[in-house]
Amino acid sequence: MSISCSDFFSDSDLFCAEDTSGILSEESPESASSFSDFDSLSPPLPPMEEEESIAGFLEDEQNFVPGFEYLSRFQSHSLDASAREESVAWILKVQAYYGFQPLTAYLSVNYMDRFLNSRQLPQTNGWPLQLLSIACLSLAAKMEEPLVPSLLDLQVEGAKYIFEPRTIQRMELLVLGVLDWRLRSVTPFSFLGFFACKLDSTGTFTRFLISRATQIILSNIQEASFLAYWPSCIAATAILCAANEIPNWSLVKPEHAESWCQGLRKEKIRGCYQLMQELLVIDNNQRKTPKVLPQLRVMTTRPLTRSSVSSLLSSSSSLSSSTSSSAF
View 1: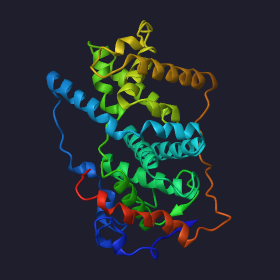
View 2: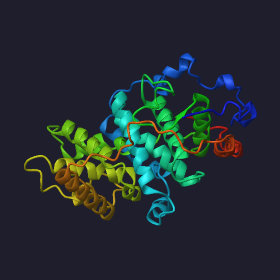
View 3: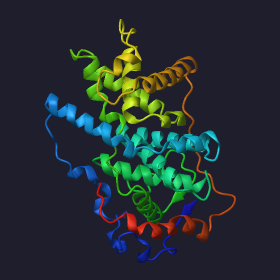
View 4: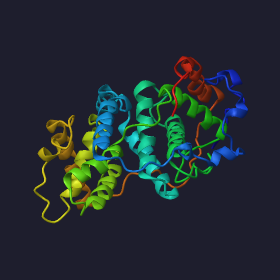
């Protein structure tokens, strides 16, 4: 079902008082570009500078995760965990469909969780959550991918509703405002290389550790229980689980990770490790595929109205004070 908000908003609804022509459109050549095009390549950091960089990540990571009360809302069923699982599954399918980087998928989910931690959608599932998922994936792709599909082409792999580009662009602005334009997040991928080298100083299995840990992180991203752990803890745990798959490395235990850098807490790593191992055992035993949305596009039996879409997106006007100075 195609949904448009072209008649719902004026230019005054935009956060920074831009003209609507300033928004990336399907006809604009910038729509196929990426924010990452402006990033310059850097040489590897010397060991001391790398340690300082990791220390900075550890200090900042708390600013890029939802609060602990966010997980409790899933546990109390005030938020629908199954709806989140479906949204994450759809993001992972689109990531695989277009060959996006793992970081793009992780950032998409991170943006979605941080948004839901701060704002309440009109309903906990259905079209508002899908619109949020599309907007978050679009923003993450623009951050990390050299080529970004159009907003219409991004809506593949079983999308239940089809939103017009203007609707998604408005939602992107709402997400940017809620996140205070802080999109360059600290994620588990910020730590993987460093932790892998700490565990494997010879470099023999470093590439395997990073690759396998990346797979483990993405395979567990649907599980809301991991919201209880910060990125550094998830990264350390994923490296430990990957190491256990190497012959003669089965003696590597969570206690070893505590010495990799200051800030890692043994109790948290043990809890995350136990959860991750349990899910790996379930996956290995059952070989159960992730929950996914159906391939067929579903028409709503109750059509969406102007008021239903505008009630979600018009709230962006209340966020104008939070968008003045932050950059990606």
